[in-house]
Length: 146
Image (cartoon, rainbow, N blue to C red; front, side, top):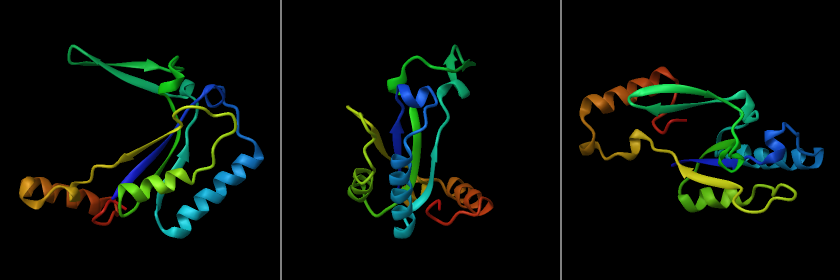
């Protein structure tokens, strides 16, 4: 099972303030532990929303909205993509993340990543399953998306 751990943004991440060297060291240690356990598929920090865009839909049309975005509580600062055996294991890994200094409230989200292999064979038309398998093969991914 794949899970995405999403780190929430705050005023500092939106301002482009880099964490302390101590905290960066703690994050490196955490990432190393994920890699050594063989569960880390990807993990990246994100630029502030001023470097991003949103796509809004209205009346069947898409509109681009350039950042920065004012709702900092809705923004993310980074993510980890992990492959583990259960939701509980994903939460255990998320709980090991070092707590940023001064943080209060929700700081992380843990989301299960939908994978075509999660769908029972009889629930997906054969052509859809073949498409998913061919796409994974083209992308160099195994049967579980890694």
